[in-house]
Amino acid sequence: MIVNIAGEDLQLLGEKAIFWQKHQLLLIADLHLGKANHFRRSGIAVPSQSNDQNIERLIVLLQQMSIKRVMFMGDLFHSHYNPSWEDFGTFLNSFSEIAFDLVIGNHDIMSEHQYTKYSINIYKDPIALDPFVISHEPLAAFEGYNLAGHIHPGVMLRGKARQGIRLPCFYFGKSQGLLPAFGEFTGSHKLSIKKEDKVFPIVEGKVLSF
Image (tube, rainbow, N blue to C red):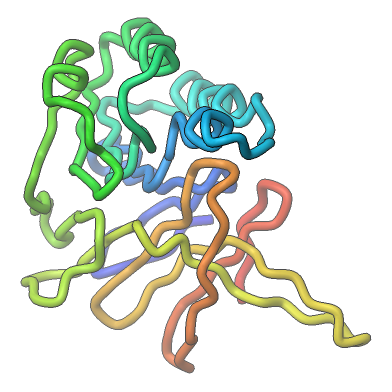
């Protein structure tokens, strides 16, 4: 689905990412690689295949779309270093023709060396790419239109029998937009929606209008 935000056409993908064709740029928020490993080490039983599913979806996008740059909008790797990071690095090396950027998020706590050794360009401050200001957490003050992650936005859809389901979504307000978490096993935060807001839930890999 293509939507016009701040005068720019953005393609909302059912894989929970945004493709900005003008720059051949893929925007991904909150991949949270290594989260399953983190919880298992704490004795919490979680699915072991979640990292593989995340990477598989990313591979499909990189192979099927004309992408020159990927921007991870924070929380790329959920925990301290562990061997699953090397698996991800091997994956990145197989797409050497694509530039990978990371806007540092609150969970990106590894040393800079771990990112740069796989040619990931890291940014500690928001990135200005007119008309957007791209950040991990939503900004309180900015010039332009802020695209952010961190919140894991979700919206509740209700049926006639009062049953409801919370779905990940893209959210665009007057001056700020939120991307859903790309990673599996991340949960979502129910948003308070205003009449003028644009909201696009994701159901089984499809983007819908709300």
